[in-house]
Image (tube, helix red, strand yellow):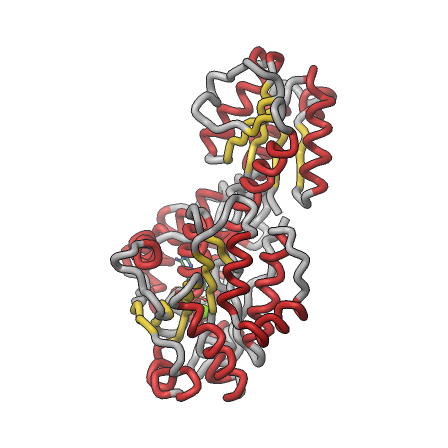
Length: 447
Ligand SMILES: Nc1ncnc2c1ncn2[C@@H]1O[C@H](COP(=O)(O)OP(=O)(O)OP(=O)(O)O)[C@@H](O)[C@H]1O
Ligand SMILES: [Mg+2]
């Protein structure tokens, strides 16, 4: 769930405490800023701690009262949060007062209807969470290594802006909409398909009005069960008391269309129009799913695609032929979106962008060596692996070290990355076709 900083004037502790209880009750991690001002935390220490908390937070809930208006602490919190891209969620806690920095933002109005205000706040936070959050806590590495980037790592996805925009346009535009077809992102092994869809497209669509998104499904041996599990997670957020078993039963009896419609109708932010299902590593349907289970999955999804469901999937290109001739998947027409490896010119930003977000410096010579040694986007997993090794234990204010890079190469004068390539080839079980199990991202976003 979301990480929330509650900003309030000292005089409004009672109100802030009430909001704190609401938010914790809804499962969020909450930080009340009063500790900052009370004890030793003034001056430089306050400034340091405030910035750290605002890097951590996804949202700043502002308790707007007349005391809030005159508090310089609160004005500083709002201004810094806004400059960092933290979502501002003002709560009107006293009627007739308006903060100049928050005027243009819709307020949840506690003074008129506290139940509705609470629901509006929860919905805003639910959306932020579904889109992967906005904060980047100190100490979290911006380089995840061999696993794909996930939705909560959207801030460190660089070099794929154009592809994300094109895919989002395909999904949302009625003219171009891929009606009734699976939007299949196809590309060579390790080119970044899962990362693009998880950290790019899913993040964008989760913020889209009218859309509900499920977390990505990996088909494995039982893709219908995988789908039922993610449907249950989303249903829980909409306060529908469906268990995984209920959903499995419902899917068998009535199919997916009815269930998707009900889920969209129960969306706490108002009825949704479209449910986005993401199936990552679609080739697992061919390599891990038995024929009958595969057919059942396709028969469930097929009719829903011309209804309320849109399906995006990622597929290694070497499986495309097999997919197109597989009789059990014939119920799922596809539209392919070819994904090429990252261009060489994008390699620099893939190194510098995440490092900058996490406050880690990299000197120009090391960037140039890493780019030269990586050579092309085809070696992206190996660059990702190397960066994770270099960033291991390096925190904000630290630096990626050329010495460590040399050590990764065994201290020889040979190109270190080439050696890392050789070593890591064994550890990346999914790197070489045919597909083995891929390194899977953790199920939920780390706190
Ligand atoms: N835009 C990016 N910037 C930095 N690293 C990336 C980017 N895209 C992918 N990566 C990294 O490259 C590696 C491969 O990415 P990913 O798993 O998304 O590729 P894939 O095409 O889905 O692979 P597979 O064919 O195994 O399913 C991972 O280590 C991932 O963290
Ligand atoms: Mg993948």
